[in-house]
Image (cartoon, rainbow, N blue to C red; front, side):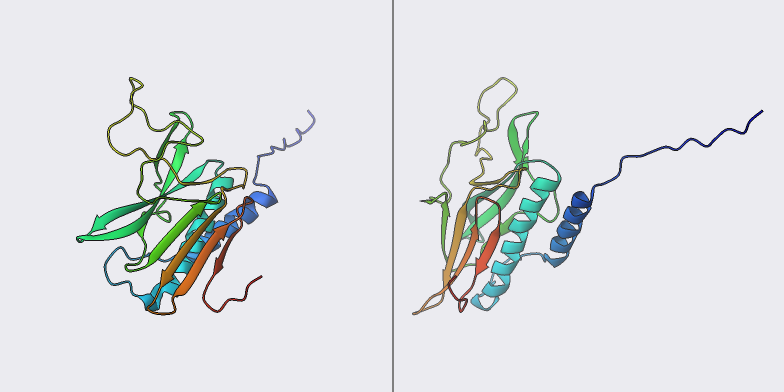
Length: 204
């Protein structure tokens, strides 16, 4: 009886592009540090904060492509320790339920901007009124099972990173300091390229 030839089994692996994307995300995650939600962040740490925020936004954009989901960012104004603070929160589109839900990724936690900074955010060239209730621009907002709007504030993102790698162009400008103010700008192109300009950086 002739010997049986071994059967080769092929398993589907990761493509080189997917592996490179994972390495990029791992590198970004390693560079992220927790942005304090407490008081007294201070102007001296504004350089560090803006770098962390830029890295976090880039990480969210990379994850949107790798995991093929739409990732949004909500900018808000809330009261913390009896003081008004600007905040940001990441949300993920649940396409089955057609609603946005808070991100469960530990690297995409809700965060606060430093105190005593002037914050301006423009999306697609239009300045946001931070903290205002806005209607969904691309997707239906959160609904109850009976089809009615759920009570409370809907999770409607101001900025969206798409799974295609594109993004809504935005500019986040922070100003701080007495007299001659320091200005920091985080920008995203429609292709999802996120850049940071700090005081002293030369204009392109």
